[in-house]
Amino acid sequence: MIYKICHSDEWHDAVESGCYSGSRDDARDGFIHFSTADQLAGTLARHFAGQSDLVLIAVAADRLGSALKWEKSKGRASGGGSIFPHLYDELDISAIEWSRPLPHDEDGRHVIPDGLI
Image 1 (cartoon, rainbow, N blue to C red):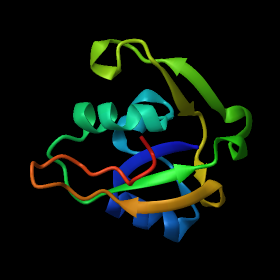
Image 2 (image 1 turned 135 degrees about the horizontal axis):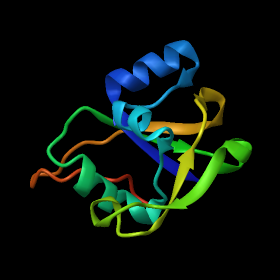
Image 3 (image 1 turned 30 degrees about the vertical axis):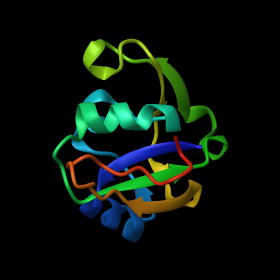
């Protein structure tokens, strides 16, 4: 399982259209960024700190085919060379296992659903 974090309005549009084309950052980089369960906390802290109205999407990686590539991130701000899943295609909604809102705790940190990390 791999995970995508996006804004709820983007996710709503994806559900209605049947596919997710990615965020502005994804479009800039030429692929849809994903994280593993172990990478979620770091991704949230680095790229989504202080943002609200986010959704966590669980995706069955084996349903994405050859468009899914496991690649090193570029630079310290992106995870210091860790291997991340990148999708070089639109995300078909049929590959989604579940989606959930990402609320904040009392300290303002995003709460990752139990059992993922």
